Amino acid sequence: MEAFCDICGQGYDMRDPAVTLHPGPEWTCADESACFSRAAAITANDALAAAVEAALAAHTEVFPGDPS
View 1 (cartoon, rainbow, N blue to C red):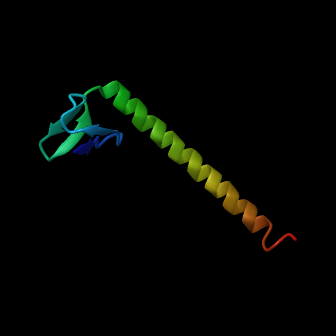
View 2 (cartoon, rainbow, N blue to C red; view 1 turned 30 degrees about the horizontal axis):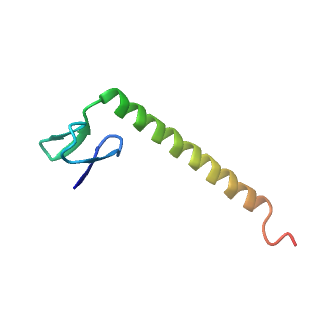
């Protein structure tokens, strides 16, 4: 069975010692520094994806319709 960290979303087998179950129930990575690094990378990737989507949306508004 899989468990996912509530902070970074990393997937683990529930029996893996790299993930800890807390009351609530919440799962977290045992290695906090790696966990927060993954969470920061995910946030940066989400911000980049949002910027790319915004740029594409702006581009389609500047050039509406079929250019052919």
